[in-house]
Image (tube, rainbow, N blue to C red; front, side, top):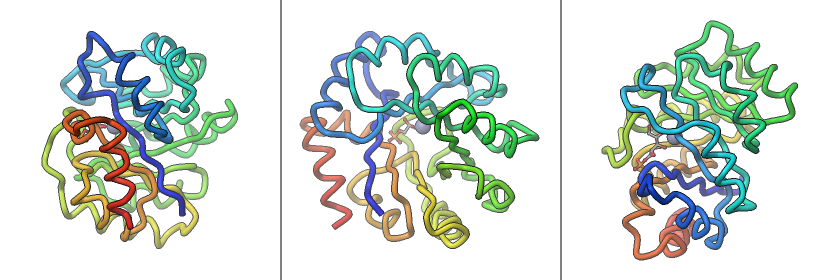
Length: 214
Ligand code: DX5
Ligand code: ZN
């Protein structure tokens, strides 16, 4: 399957998201990943749909919202209206993941379901046929720049075995040393935050990630 590079803006200077987003666009990335945190599901608070709407004017790359929020469905419409084409919510926060996937699809966007490092793959099994993306967190959500959790690679392999055609995203600690093992395990979509911000340029970082997959 094709590789999608999905830079997160979480490690950018919050006073200036627009310039790095333009640079990501120029570097030919596949998705712009927006980490939305509500201060409840995870301690930090980041930003809401207004930022997505504004950044949509700086890029033609599709945007996705990773909702680290306790009430994700309360924000679906706002992020869809802001231009996000893929909405990812956490399996841990809602009793009705199946219904939420159907809701997102009925609104014309792709439905993603995320699991934390401490959440088993079994949580996704009953909904694997109604989702468009599984997101395996490879760090605990809330902060950029954390150490990659090796044991999460097995979860990617397990989801790949459940559905061979499903896009599988990994998020946290993705860099040229970890990406190859994730790719070999079956991951297709790679969120990357702090690695890209520390790279000599976003374009160079993106190219190193792509070539590391071989
Ligand atoms: C963490 C976020 C990630 C984060 C990844 O809660 O979901 O998207 O930005 O950052 P790095 O690539 O620095 O691990
Ligand atoms: Zn994320």
